[in-house]
Image (cartoon, one colour):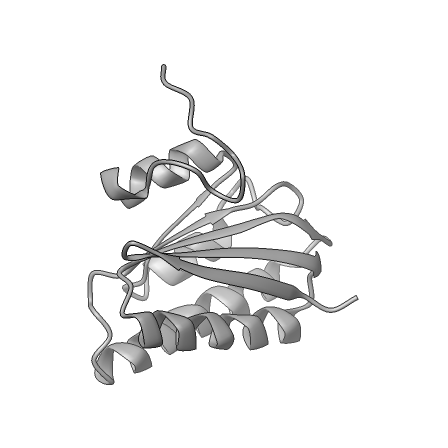
Length: 142
């Protein structure tokens, strides 16, 4: 099964829900689709919910994806995308690397990105306007 994603712009935030089996080729393809939506809606915050993605990316796939994402973001910045656009990825292991190698690769190339295992933490990192319902989940007060 290939990766599929559903996108919804919401008050300056692009909510992306992805599902399917990880492959580097599919991840790159869907990242380009997501970037087109970022450009179209001029969003500065992206919440990528990939908790239902399956697979176990190899170390080099994590490297190539992080490098690809950062390079693509840099190209979109040259076309007018905001330099402060932030990307919060919510993933589960083994797709989410506990060592955060892919995140490190992208961040070292000037991409504003952070990987989480918790939706609420991702929304908090994205900013106060991001809180609230995300794909049917309600944020609980502490």
